[in-house]
Image (cartoon, rainbow, N blue to C red; front, side, top):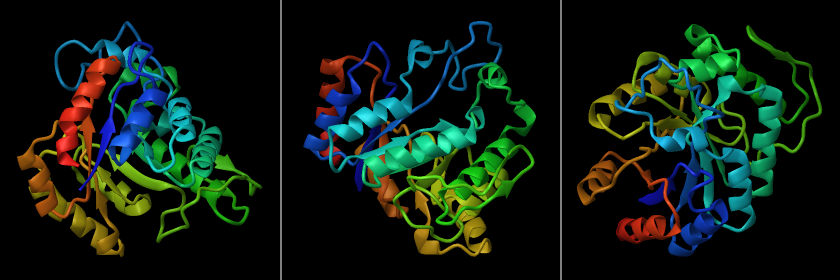
Length: 281
């Protein structure tokens, strides 16, 4: 079982460079970072976990800048987003950021894709909440056009791009319908989400990792119906607070990677938790 970590890196926590070096030295598989550009103060959207929104949500570092630092001081550590709010980005700019990070890291990048929960944050980016999933799907298709080997035009419902010279390309070669870096879609189990996964991703990034015994057979069925290779499906439980029982259960389900949650804290506390998590390596 590969054990990666996720953390809300902020201006108050351990730095990306220090954390990345420690993760690689200890044998952890990867570092995944979340994304929030800002948190509007006048927010009516409830925090999905209940209660007050934790302080770190409004202080997150830009994940691509932070992962670029992490890539520069490591050689093997996987680098990922958990998740990128694709609908909140210009897709041409985002395609360049992703391809550049993947190129400079030697193909170590995993694109975690998500659709968000904060209505007000999305609205400030001009995103209509009702169509955010369709917008995200459209922007993924546009980015795939820029990542293909030959100049390829794309005309979608929400955006378009002319056939263009766009380099660097992501390192990983196309596989089935997927073009670009390793791509995992985050979100709760359901027919819409599973359709997105089967259409343009390598797998699923289920937050918390609960209910997989029931949902995995459903996803595998959707995947097979789409003509995808059953052996190629990747499921990576995300933001997990690990236990020996959980890790063993994931292994029984055929899961090969788990992303465990670190506290948004300073160096001493984070490294102490890494010492505890090292028992699962």
